[in-house]
Length: 191
Image 1 (cartoon, rainbow, N blue to C red):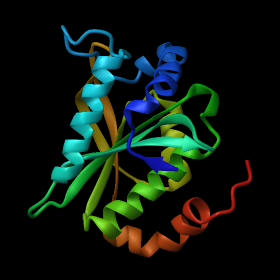
Image 2 (cartoon, one colour):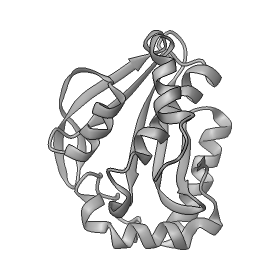
Image 3 (cartoon, rainbow, N blue to C red):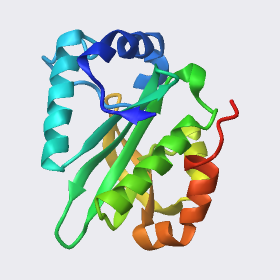
């Protein structure tokens, strides 16, 4: 299940972030100086308020990923641009213990459906550090097109890193919608 994170999710979110800290931070930007503990409650609450405001403005949508009411990660649609481009980016992370079980490809497929069918976007991009094999596995399962490499694109853990850029357009979504629905969105849970 995907839904926005709430104040009441903090303890579960924090437990996963702390337990998986070393595994997650190798793929994430460093927090800005002076922001305090990135896993602290005050910053988490501020983040929830900001995400709610972004959702109201239509500039981003952040979702917690839940399995039987257990928090297991996040999947976000961000950087939404309207006008002639109608585009956005997807980012995600998952509890190390739940990685590789198909939850993030399922979440990403649901976000594709939301972005193309509800928001009317034209293109969705996913940027991945080339050495991030688990995230490349998500893209492989989904069969998303590789567009190229963005050189020193995003600061990751203190260093500017290249990113593989993958994308899907609404035309590709329409052509492959049945694949996404059958394999990720409507399938019977079997795990």
